[in-house]
Image (cartoon, rainbow, N blue to C red):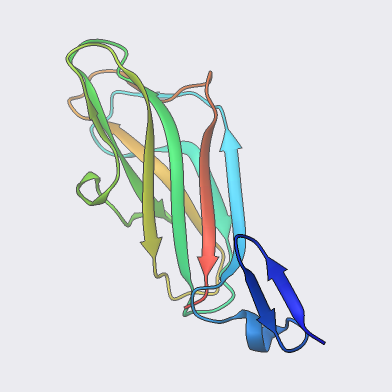
Length: 159
């Protein structure tokens, strides 16, 4: 019996889908998404947790986790700025220099910031990924707005 999986293309296997043919490098093994609209304000110049967070348990130590997030911030006034970073279980795994957000404007700005990172955690334990943010200069900024949905998506990719 042939099994077909249809998406943008068709993949054909010569039998049932099981652990022997689904865990092929590059295959998507699971997807976890969290959406919220909690407001987080800060004046901190060190990273503080937002409520944009999700937990995933990789099925293999060779798996990669693709992290995609969008978060809606607000400078609240002229010339303020803020930064985001991705943290795994409370430890920073990215900085604004490698594809996370850094926002600055000479006037007030409300913007959706998007970030993406491929992580290699080498773990089969539950992992919590959280977006943290901070004020660039100690002035009050809104890291996430309650009027907008903020989301994080975690995708386990077979390694």
